[in-house]
Image (cartoon, rainbow, N blue to C red):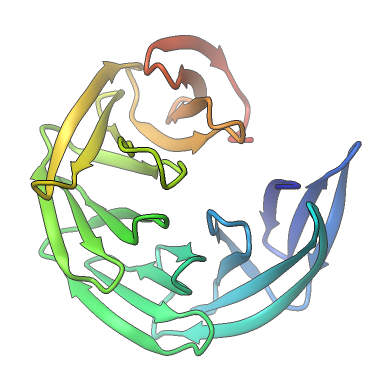
Length: 252
């Protein structure tokens, strides 16, 4: 897709573009950014959460496989900054997560669509864009909603959660894994059984002695990178077999 990575520092947004060599394609230093960014699975939209309680949506334009232009198309304001925002490029909606509620908003019109309230602290949220699903992770439960915030299912977790990854697979994949990282250093992989609207456990693995704080899917979609609070990194391949444990200095 041409986008190698997204990098944010407190003063500007950088988009690093992969061609023959990595180069900075876009910078914006006009406003102060916080370190929160979300990219849609179709690579057409980016939402950046600012430290001033505003979320900015950027539209990415391509000529063939080459990124040709990036343009700010909307902004969404709130009383407090969100903990994180996830963007769905197929349905043109973003989900901004706060301590105990989710706000979904139209990224083209900057209007609120729905609000979901919860009784406990939220950890993260993410879209399965191809199926129009929104996953929400709290400290003790995993929920799934439609893109219109209609409740489908939930599952009580056996451990305290720390991180979430909704895997970016194609529409034809029947099993669509959702990975949760736990405070005891293990991960659990879930799948929504669409026939019964039931979240099921399909894989569990103890990986570290430290909390799993970050999960990233490799651009090849063949591996998941797992990071713990001790700054160690691990790789799990798509066979879901534990593969590698290496020290890392950053979450690159």
